[in-house]
Amino acid sequence: MKQILLVTMVALGFTFGLNAQAIYEDERYVPETDPLVLQKLDQWQNIKFGLLMHWGAYSQWGIVESWSLCPEDYGWCERKKGDHYNNYFEYKKDYENLQKTFNPVDFNPQKWAKAAKDAGMRYVVFTTKHHDGFCMFDSKFTDYKVTSEQCPFHTNPKANIAKEVFDAFRAEGLWAGAYFSKPDWHCPSYWDPYFPPLDRNVNYDPEEYPEEWEKYVQFTHNQIDELMTDYGKIDILWLDGGWVAKTSEEEIKEYYKHKGEQTKSGFVKNRIVNQDIRMDEIAAKAREKQPGLIVVDRAVHGKNQNYLTPENRVPNKTLPYPWESCIISGGGWSYTFNAKYKSGNECVHMLVDIVAKGGNLLLNIAPGPDGKWQQGAYDLLNEYADWMKVNSEAIYNTKPIEPFKENNICMTQKDDGSVYFHYMAEEGEAMPAEIKIESIELVKSTKLRLLGSKKKLSWKKANKGFVVTIPEDIRNAPPCKHVWVIKANKIVR
Image (cartoon, rainbow, N blue to C red):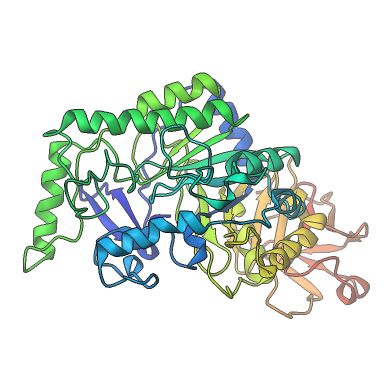
């Protein structure tokens, strides 16, 4: 994942780097016009819950994915492992030599797919290549890949990891999404070995060396074409590295104008470079192979960002376009030793909150160097599984209803008029005898029940809204933990 996103700000009209923890997503959106993509987006907005996996040779060190190769002076780029972490060029050799020891012999994607399905996840987005350029698929255009003879795992029957992941998850009924990094810090036509890398960007001027840049454009197109051709049905092309984009002279001038105001010495940690990778062509060619493909050109305003992706945060309101919060479940985006995972209570609340605001949750789990998930990941997914067995109808195929949340109660609705009131319980909280909702009115014939119970709930009209009574036997043995859902068959606004 990017630790910095490049975002076009409406108010300021310039592009700049912003720490991911403080991002406020650009809320402009260019609607799609392809009817097949629109149909696919509608389906995607109904399945609500997906799995993201960051995995590569870097997992052996338990470090942040790729970013320690970036020579920018930010904390997430700090070199903490390897024998030569104080010498950039020697460190890069150490890092890239991780290919020669990557051997995840316990890789079992079928086990992952079963756990994800049971948890209620309906799509997977897998890192086929991160910024470091190491391919978790059998690309013909590089030898820096898991299937190379330099990688000990290449003799394993499951060596083409991306293919194995996609096949396993599709077999469980999940959609397949391919994460792919537009920048490639290993490729000599992106970071030309004649020049030292300067920051995350291409390390030469694409306008001064157009033939070299064209090599990189073709390299990128060819690799994406491989993924769209040789890996079965792909539902989502999830592109990272938003700084690799066509950028106008006006944006570039505005960027440096404001950069100059932010630095006294004149030192700029990262630049902005026009890197036109011809995204329109990429999308068109990909959809020739995969009709209706959802394309997510992250953090690049335009028609090739079919949905937006707030990173590691949940918006505080409903948003007027398709969106997905991608969130770390524990540790970091990539594998960390002895990672501490979020609690079931926190994560179920997070899913409900996102869905009530009209979004999807893409939850990240990072496999380890042995090819396993940590037990904490399975424990968390089991919490989801137990809750979704009871309450999934209040999640799938729903949409927001104003005000979407009242105090600790989130709300979702279905097209048939059903409304669901999600009571977000604190950790260890006992179910209350009464629940009051002021922002919604019921009609006399409205029927209420708690999901997981067949017993009809009694309610009465209040000065504002209504009060529902929870019987003692249900309170003593709630059907689930974390969030209790009351279903109303109809309401009056």
